[in-house]
Image (cartoon, rainbow, N blue to C red; front, side, top):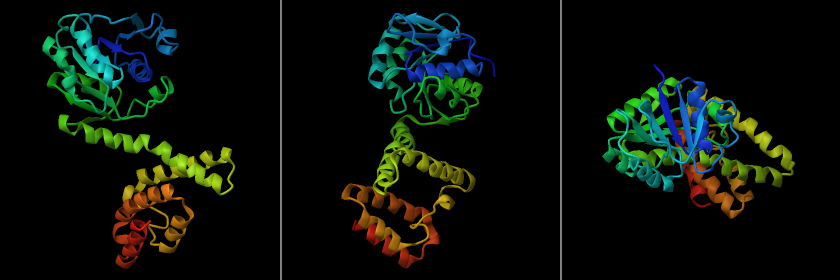
Length: 289
């Protein structure tokens, strides 16, 4: 798959610079331009190593530009779409994307009216750092929505990064993004609760998270090896109602509700491994928690 001749990224934040760095490192682009609202670029290898050019303001796409990525907060996407559309018609075949997981492509309507192919290019990866997160983007799935021309450009970028593509229908994007949020964003608060419970059990605060991360990594390895259903372990999976009841009595009301809600899903995942009477007993405990 040949590299895109030129890509513009609007927004030098974490998402924009991480994705730009990943595109450069995988030779997905021949030339990269990053646009920002500050006169000077951020301190990032893209600029300190001369891997990308930086433009203060909004660069007009050149004839070689194959894609423009709007790596800005969701509420800013319409503004940037209008601004880019105001610069005139695009180069032939140029596609414009936002990186939002939740937004539809109708926010790109001004660009579509100008002649751009429009879509969404959303890497299914947690981008917490503009440099280290770039290392995890190649190979990560990418959710794509858009016009046929935009989807073709998106697939070309994803293929260059070794990233499989998820084609998400426009109307299903909220469900897709909710799934991503639940799998990624909900893990830190869940671990925060678990850390607090360990500290209540007299585990030193400095040891709580490292201890739990070892457990989490083992669970993820099990899921990858044997699948979600078979990776379920613990008192719910083995039908130990007494231990479940013990946990519920030990937790404060807020933690008890969270435990009960998640445990109800565990009962479903445990499936036929649970005797029907035991299943009923555990569900009654959880529903009355």
